Image (cartoon, rainbow, N blue to C red; front, side, top):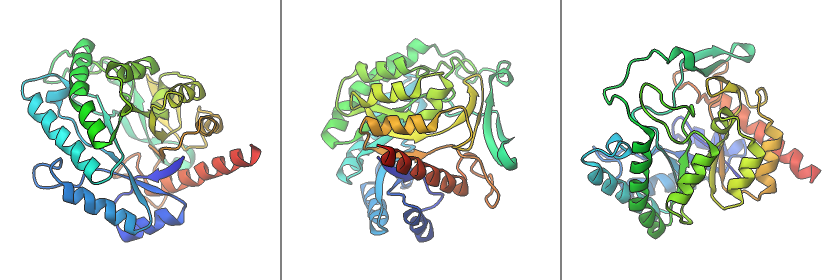
Length: 320
């Protein structure tokens, strides 16, 4: 596998730092271009070249947003899908192999605290569903799961052929937390079987998943078994290496070496399956020396995580 990293900014200092700690690639968002970030082939190309000139690879574009009109199946979605198709073609033309996207409508990954104390008073993100049970509905009212499944099929039928032409892998991310509904909004990617259903909706070599370990842990899944399940189908395109304590209803993000997940067993499963895609550390506590302005994405916390990941890989390789 290839260790990748999200950097706070693509400065020369951060790119050198990534190389110095043994990172091979970068996971980035789309560069902005006026009002339409999907219409920016040259910007994507120069982003890739900037990263490659620093000795790294642009492995995944994450945060290629899908408007709620698409996810909710509302009027105007065809226009939004056409723009997303344009974005896929630009990624393919610029040589970007994978895009990570999600199907969380109205709001994305959700936490009820960004300042939960963990080891050494590091600040972590956490979620307590009991605090959300009396939350008001959004302006969209009740959104049933069936509506989201229908709109997802419509979207995939439109974009998978374009992804095939462009040579870009579509790696869908599970819902975080994997609970439904939240504030009246259904969430459908809440189990390993639901992720399999996405793959089966529109079968294609380009239709696969992001294996977000934390989300699968929140689901109560057997991590090594699910890694083997999806990697065995060549559908595990991208991995988020996370650890936490708790379950979907109440969990706290933890240091990678200090949670409920057996991280050694998970890493061993990736390696045993021959997973050769990008993996990045995700949702780390904010540690001393860094600020909490991007909760879950402390640079220093990710440096600790990369060192831990490299140690696991070395140990597993030497044990055979």
